[in-house]
Length: 194
Image 1 (cartoon, rainbow, N blue to C red):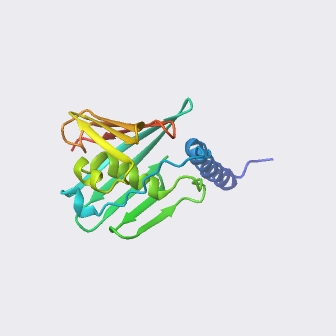
Image 2 (image 1 turned 30 degrees about the horizontal axis):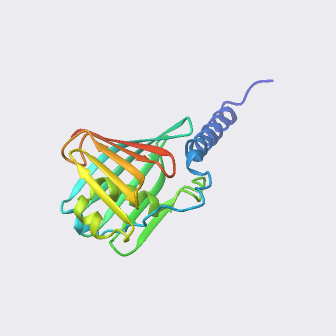
Image 3 (image 1 turned 90 degrees about the vertical axis):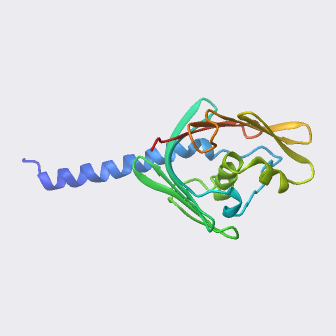
């Protein structure tokens, strides 16, 4: 019996799509675990204009949690009116975030776990990129943020919630490392050189 080349090609394409979908699910599984009982998210929603600059950058993101490492490529654009983020995994779009200063609109791949929230992505972007003075003005009373040189520390009362380190003076250049001590993950952001 002779193999049907068309059927073989179609089966290969179906297998490839399935492998990509499974890969996306595995990659994002680190984000799907239940958060600790006490939430330590600020739900920052700073207006795009308060960044004080317009940027358009390509980034490579690495998330490390519980001995797992996941990678994601992202395109980020911010101007006075809006913030746009497109996240890609294995060459497929898995997340889109649009924020106009008032409303967050998001598109997510159907296999993206519900625990991966656009609000949390927006918060990490703003904690790393926005001027520390702007962030400080929008923190609840028991929270504070400090910046010394290329290091930022976010506190609730006297408990360190997150540490951020910059390899470059400009916040959106070089490598940024965010260690979230409450949710126990490290986010490394490598900005592509122009």
